[in-house]
Each structure stands twice: as C-alpha cells, then as structure tokens.
Length: 439
Image 1 (cartoon, rainbow, N blue to C red):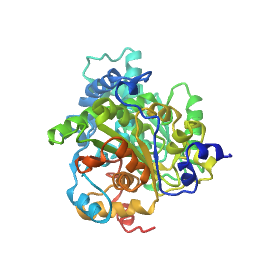
Image 2: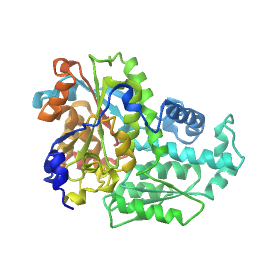
Image 3: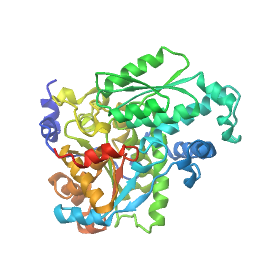
Image 4: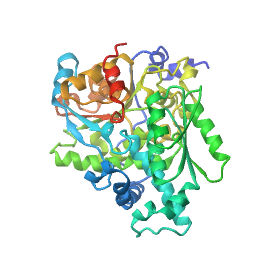
C-alpha cells in the first residue's frame, strides 16, 4: 500500500511506519455536549449493564470464591503508588500524582477482560434462559447453578478468538456456567494461557496466523453451528458496555480516596490498547462520568500500532499494520493486534486525546520498577500504561496538547491513572522470567 497520502495528512505516520516511539494527538476530539452528538450509546446502556451484573452477583459468589469479598461484583483496587512515582520522577519528566488501577488483579480472570468478557457470557446465558422461559429478571439468579440450567447451557457453545486474556475470561466463565467453550488462539498466545484454559475445560484451537486470523476462523466455525455464539472482540457492543461499567466504580473509588477531579485537577487515564474493545468501552464510561476533566490516552507497541494507524488514517478496521510494512510482533502479547476494531476506532473519534507508541524493552523495565518499588507484579503488556504519563511531558506534540488545554501551569495537579490490564494469573515461574528479561 502506498502510504504517502496518509503521511502528508498526518506526518506522525512517517515515524509510526519507521517503528519509532512517538505520540499521535487526535484532532477530531470534541468537548462538552459535542462529544455525544450521534453517539451510539448513552448512560442508560451503562445502567442496563450495571443492573445485569448486580442480578448475577449472587451466582458469581456461588461459583467464584474470589468474588465473595466484593459481594459478587468483579472490581479492582485503585492504589496510589508513591514509590513508583518517586522512581519515575527521578529518571523521567513525570509531573503530578501517579495511581494504578489494578485490573491486573480482578477476580476470576485476572485481567481487564474479566469485565467485558464475563459480562458478555452472562448476557448470553440470561438471554438464552429468558427466551426458553426458564428465567425472569426478578428471579434469584443462583438457580442458574442448578443441574437443570447447567444441562440446558451445556447444549450451547460459546466461541472466541483471542491472543490470551479475553480467551481466559470467556473460557473460564463459560465453562464454569456449563457452556461448551472453544477458544481460537493466535500464534502469539502464551503457552501457559492455553494450558490454563484446557485445565478449566475449554477446548483450545491453535492457529499459525495472528489475532485477526484467529478471530476470522473462529467466527466462521461458530457460524456453522446454530447453537454456537461468537464473542466478537472486533465488533461487540456487549463487550464494550461490559467495560464501560468500570467508570462509575472508579469515580466512587476516586471520591472515597479524596482525589479531586475537576478543571484544575484533571484526570489523565492511560490504557494499553490491542484491538481496542476494552480501552474503548472504559473510555466511553470515563468520558460520560468525568467529561472534559478527563483526558484519555492509549499506548500501543511500536510493532503493533493498529489503533493509531486506523484512527490517524480514518480507515479504522480497513487498514492494518502490515499495510505500513510493520510486522505486528511484540512481547506485549495482549497488544499483538495488526488490525484494529473498526467499530471502536469510529466511536472513539470524539473521545480520546491521543495514542503513544513504545518499544518492548521498556515493558520489562517498568515491570521491574513497579515490583521493586511497590511489590506489585503485573504482566508486560499492562506495564505499557506507564509510558503515557512519562512521555506526556517529553514529546513536543503532547506538550502542545497540554498548552492548548491550559494544563502546563497546573501540571503538578494532574492525577495520572495507569490502567494495569493483566497479571494475577501469570504463573510465578513465568513472572520471574519476565522480571529477568532485558531486551
């Protein structure tokens, strides 16, 4: 593909094509009510998802011990990380306060995918049971754990294509509820994730191709079976809304911790981005809850900047990193995506501030810094979130963004929220190997 015309329009794409670390600032971002003009979702959609998760909470407690402490609600801690902040301030341009949103430690699946993934499985189970006349909204959803329901669900299959964490989330929750489950995994999926899925009763199909190929073939296989349902990471609005629920919950955590979020104390959120479903859903919720007081950035590997390329060219899902001569190979397995979600790229146009790209070697450096300073272990892809708050003050384009938004004078008031997307389920020996990895 001749990328000259795109580079002329968005010069940053030259650096992206050269696999250089950079930042793209989204010129189509809107403010105020403009954001929501013709937007496909609203707060009622989030409320609907929240209510559904509350209905399922007693059942989740029945099935998953690690949800008992939170009464069946799958939510992660928000933690101030002053030691990590100090370490980063000593060696980088970081200004402001640093927090970690620990989806890395979410119950059931140990990653951000425990939000959207489990939500979509529950949504599908509820829909099937209601259509069969077996369940009403005001029932005690623990009846879904009975033999009658489990036998009913076992006649149905759930399938998903994944590089890893979404597969774990869908696989573990579907198998636990009684569904037959098939996870289609790309060539960059980690072996331990495949092993764990098989141990939970999921069938794992392995492919030589990348994420896009696994999704395509998984979708095709699912379409051949009338009793099969495909969780589509590229296009699912159900997944998207499952992620959006995070926003009201983090708002409460922020208030409970006495953290100010307003015009003079802006909240900057940094989300690792693969195909875009989870950061997209979370971003929609955050923008609904915090409005113009929040600024959202994604982080992608220099070798898999699919969302950046999709949004910067305006082609979204109709372009892939390979069109730019980029291989899509990265140590950040959760972010190893060559073609972004066209659906997410389009709906994020008025919402996100920009996207950073970073080299893989820093994933392991940040991982060691966090472990040594705070005693917190998260997986490599999750560590990409730290690139945002550091580089925000270093690149000319992002400094210009701060200036245009009158934020440079209040930079020490900025609250930075690094969204840790996974890590709890990583086996100890693999985690130790990561901590000793230098690229």
